[in-house]
Length: 271
Image (cartoon, rainbow, N blue to C red; front, side, top):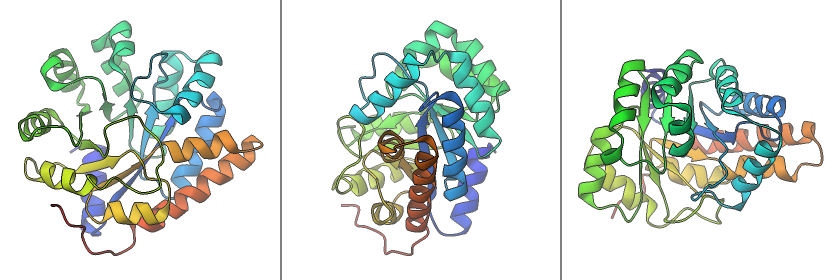
């Protein structure tokens, strides 16, 4: 079992969901990202997503786009992303969230090898579908990496089943059709989507897109196996007047979210 599998087994034994936190590598700087990731874990994040900033982020909303642009303007390279993974993996199980083009440019086998060597546990690929992932499936099998594909409310039951069969570690359920970003409340479609995924697989289901506070995290934790938060953490750093206050804001948000996933709530309806 991978580190991700171990983490899900542990929280399942506690009867609760896992808290996942995302930040782009190199934001607000290389060292600043590491400081913020450490603060996230200190606040209660249990699995880290390291974003791989990309110049054409079709799924990213304005908040994450702004962070990625700052990282790229600072000279971030693939080597820096892997260094970030190495540092993050010492804190908690770590996956990379990336579009597929940078992996192809680096070399699929080479990236899988270097990600594993850095201590990474797997890869989330929002724009790669299982039908077109044969090279990544082979490389991830070779290196023992988890592979996390996405489904959304528009996914058919057949597509969900196909995606679930290709995943290892967990399956990422995007709660809305559209770009990333914090929202006033989780999508009404989210619980139904998780229910459809559960009908197709025993894999843990992580729900992302839209969670920004502990109350929302508690709601999502009532029906999903993991609560995934990204834009809200990025926004704390973007809005902070200085680096130290940004790190403190990130830790405070993590504490609020962690309190939410540990709250006991009745399960939400799935229909």
